[in-house]
Length: 587
Ligand code: GLN
Image (cartoon, rainbow, N blue to C red; front, side):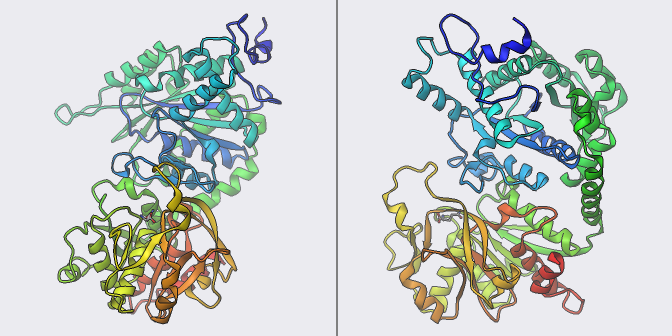
């Protein structure tokens, strides 16, 4: 059989042939190319960052790119994962709860992704088992190879079809050698063979150790990691060496010798102060054209498009170092020891800061022991406060103390989801006189449940994938701060992930007390944005605005917060007020 006939023949399941590889109808082999990114030596190398930066460079050249992350774990999505262990749960517009790397892709590519861009072993096995029950495998014993690997390939080809991508960027979570990832790598090997020469490019990320006692870089762990990949039948095309400092020529030569990878394709990917300068690092090494050559897509590149996009990107990265004015924003939360839990918020502050010429310093505040008596010492040196999303009771009273302090002392405040709910509770207790106000999440039998279950949540059992999830429109109230921040739009779309809401029967009392609900769900009484007139910046939202901030399009609620913080820190200076700051950036 000729290679070109392989793809059509393997799509049929039968007991007569060992070939099995489901192909979506209408799939054209060769149209979409695949770039696989894998890690060796250790996890946490920044595979997602590398892959998204490379994808960005190809996108700049006018190519259509589609990223996908393959996760070895058996969870169907990331919704039930503890952010303390796995980093934040990122929510896509279609409601998919996924790994934080999808946030990196969305930010770097300025592209909204969907559930087709995220795949776990749980999803793969679920689909395979459902197909088995339906009888789709026609008498075959269902095996890891070819059925489970076939399902993985089907996912990738479906994504290629759905997005009409020139290049699908496939990032495999974890490390080569993990038992749970082995079948993903096998699927990649099969896919590359089936698609034919120049259809796939394998990139191995590795780590170069530099023990302090030796004071020199050592390549052995990297060599062993690459060897392990080659034992699985995969010959890498490119090796990116992560390290703290630039990787020496000698080390790169050694790796080249042991891996059959040409020296110029063994690159140093040492630590960089900002992830936003990594595209330039890869571009300087010529990796973008190297990939185009390996995939034989040079004729698809649009270099005029690239000139424009790259100039815009460089304007942005130039501002990173130019940002001088220092402001400090406090972020309260119980996952304070792991910054990954708040990755999107940190990124959003960075985007807003860069746009406004400010360096945003973050002060992490553990709220478990905060009280009205000691809160002012903790917040004495900060210019703004964020109470981010959260679940459960721990530290909630401390967060309410932070809200009270911010409200009473004209300290800029942004409440995100749980932080929005805490602001409502604080206002109800201390302004509206509802002293027993609380959330039923914190105190199920409280006398004044100002924050209570969303009605649809009452019927739900279990915890997986059933919050109010994904993108929803928010109707803005004219002549409010929120309306101004969003350029006087009638509505704005943001992403949500919550079970509780402002209980509709309290809305009247809260508004009478002076709280303004400036954003609401279009057809339901769900309050989505609040603000306090007369305060320099007191804003809360039931949504997660941090999920949609992009480097070149900072999210207005964060720009507003940072601008208000700058005005507080530099009152005599010419820092614009929050609305003007947002308007200046958007015009
Ligand atoms: N725990 C709150 C709720 O379920 C807030 C959720 C969040 O902050 N993401 O409504």
